[in-house]
Image 1 (cartoon, rainbow, N blue to C red):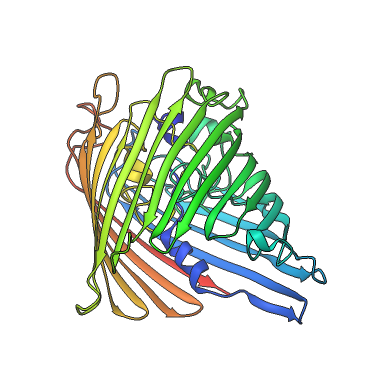
Image 2 (tube, rainbow, N blue to C red; image 1 turned 45 degrees about the vertical axis):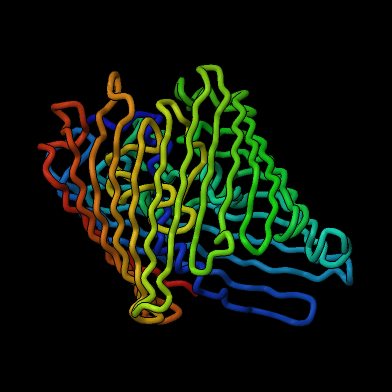
Length: 441
């Protein structure tokens, strides 16, 4: 069986937009609350049924599989008598994959595990430092998710490999697409200045994800936020990797510096959304660059308030997408449900044009269409992953404790596995389908 390369595997996981919606819409179950403290039970269960008529791991036929996870734990906070607020969380995740496993061969359908996900403590300053604003100092440490900016460089510690690659040595317990696990194993984070005006952060992060070569890094951000939006700078410095699990590509992370300038907001244009980021990597193998520019507009006075978005993204040939992940919904930053998760390109050596349209016919129902056009930049000594993809989806919040998301994907590569691509059994259109259910409490 032919698996994706280690470089591709390290960037092909996807955190379901369904789970993101579930987390955003649901409130934790309050176990106890008074004027100075709160204790919550946090529970989220997600299940998905998947089918792909084509494979991308060298095997003929298609794949039918199921994934699921349950995240369960406690979170809370304690006011400290005018000296700010302490907070923390602890949770476990149980995950599994059944059936054939995914079409890229990352899972085999026999993955099962339960592991600690969140385990962190923090402190917010409250009104102790008025010049820095409310909670102008926020210090936290432990096992937690850390996101910088819009997640273009650092979003979380994915992916969630199964037993497929490297004889199972990268296995995190299945649920590859749903990506049950996101937290960095060890973190120390300081955020200063709140959310408005000038604010920033410093972070130390260490991964225990073998697919990420257990990378250790330092990072910082400096932002200015006003009514029209946010302009920001990001810096990331690679400290170390575990050579036992690192590919030659990932070993370049040690000593690498990454810089970016970014922005997002409406620029004072009502119903508009604008965003960009330009990033460059300074590493031993030579500099690499990646950037995107995006513009969207919501037709608020039209029935169903449709939103139209266009984005152009370009990644140089040896760009390392580090810890990118699902940031603001489908297409960020795994672009295309088939291409972004199974077929490629995986945020390297490609230019991508994206058009998105979504509408809200009812308050609890969103309909969406996503189109992607992929252009491999340098086709010599690399897979030719030119192609196009159309994804159609719905997000239906039946009630506060049930969210249903069906999706259909149509992926058409220019080449197949016999002519320089990686789709098995011809370059015909792959029809991909999934149905995901989220039950948050």
